[in-house]
Length: 79
Image 1 (cartoon, rainbow, N blue to C red):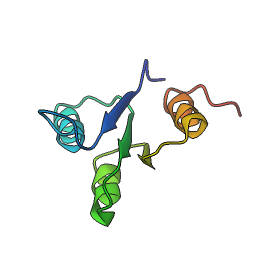
Image 2 (tube, rainbow, N blue to C red):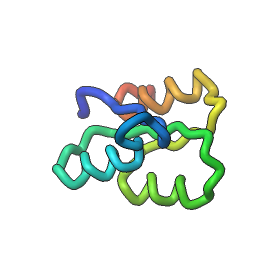
Image 3 (cartoon, one colour):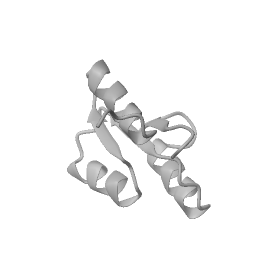
Image 4 (cartoon, helix red, strand yellow):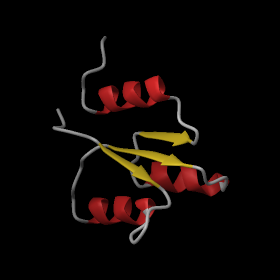
């Protein structure tokens, strides 16, 4: 069970969220990643999923849905 979850925005200052996600994967870091973005590019979701994102949200993000995704990612989802 993961000890946490990383929530990334696709467009962050410095290193973009998608680039950070790819860097984590290349280093073998398997922490679950949830992506949020205002980006309308249809390929963004596809690339995030290919890089291992467990959830993807378009802004504005529904708070309870984001919290549910984080709970699920860290294994706290109620069965």
